[in-house]
Length: 153
Image (cartoon, rainbow, N blue to C red; front, side):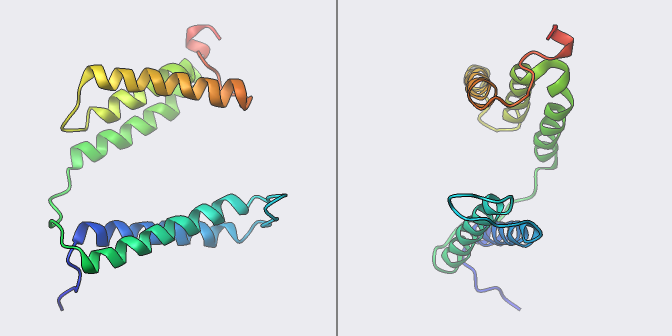
């Protein structure tokens, strides 16, 4: 059986977006929804899941119309590097704090790119760390250590 899609990348990314979006909507049903003025715990995941599913549906429809390249082979090493950077971020967050663990996350995951550049990656890592420190710790007051136990906080 031949698939009618002309763009396999859009088709499969759309299918993944629809699946994850619908899963978020279904999983959020166990919590109260609330209203737009007084949002419950299900409001945010339901809205985001619905939007993600809508974007996925658009990608699926676009894959039927617009031609594209075939999917290449999966780069297991690069996928593993990005996954490992996220795990490393989680393990380091309490020990070295948000600033350094986010720098490690960005540099490690950026290294998986074919267009990796130390200068650009370091600038992105420092900028993301400063933005997250100001936004989440200072402005929103989340109890995330900036420097962590290993660095004296």
